[in-house]
Amino acid sequence: MANRINYKSHKKYMKKTSILLCSLAIAASTSVYSFSQQQPKKPVAKKTTQTAAAKSGPSKQDIEEGKQLLSKSDCLACHQLQVKVVGPAYAAIAEKYPETDANFKHLIEKIIKGGAGVWGQIPMPPHPSLAEADAKKMVSYILSLDAK
Image (cartoon, rainbow, N blue to C red; front, side, top):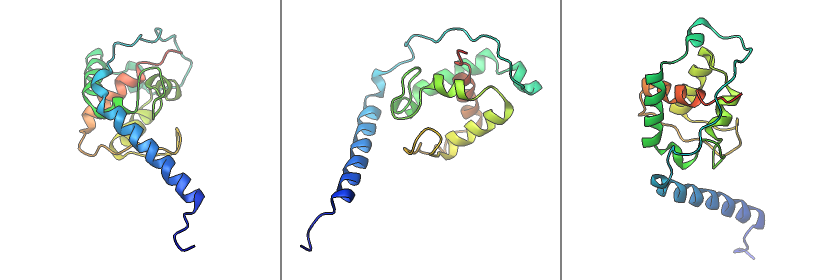
């Protein structure tokens, strides 16, 4: 009886292992994915309170550079434009977070430090070697996808 496996622990372990293996399989095949997916509809004016800096918004060049940075990163292993993979779709993130200075700061910090709990219990790994300026461009692109 000493070698008896606890069924609940084993089931939980197998679930975590399956998630990890799926994530690795997706990461290994990221070169298959691209940003050629259908773009969301153009955003309609929103009635939100934004700071003066956020109203002017990021430049088109920052948005394009953010798109390029995301396409070359490991982000596509867990995120896609319109479809939830392991993490939320970029469009869902843009819908949840309006373009405010506070949201830019929050999302930049989340990308660099990682985290879990907002979109589920699967943690987003940290990216400590990513420059804050590059993370800001990535967030600029993601928040530009808001199709409200």
